[in-house]
Length: 179
Image (cartoon, rainbow, N blue to C red; front, side):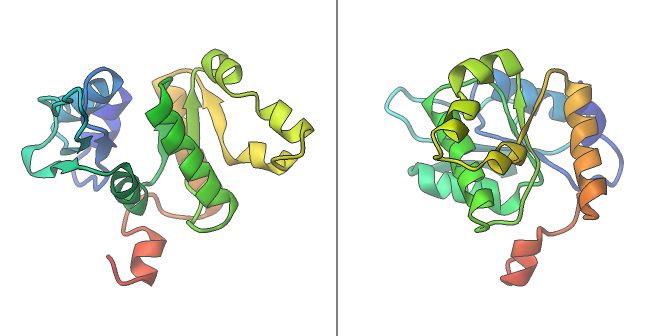
């Protein structure tokens, strides 16, 4: 629903980008597609063949052999990372993003973990702080949300507080001549 509302506005330059596969990825691509927006899929070649979902805009459907290259392309253009419950691939993308933000290798973007109950069981961030392997302020690199409306409002609020525009070339692209 929010993908439909956010992506379907005339002149909008935001594109919903997913891994291009089934399930939640397909739902996000479908919402944007049905709103008339372009939607991208960064598919990965896997032994148990994963095929792009039918809602990815054909010219924005890309296939990657290596996860590292796929993550690079996700993060180069990301305005936010919205993470739904998932497995190793999801955890890999989440922790890579948090690590790059924490070490200041990329400019911060909003990181939203959808479904507090899942994430608090899957990763005990308080335990990581207690063990001294992350700093207490590292818990501020992300937040939890439960609904699409909450996700969208929180991302917009994050950009307002950061004093940064949500659209246009990402700062790191402009700085490196990639825009």
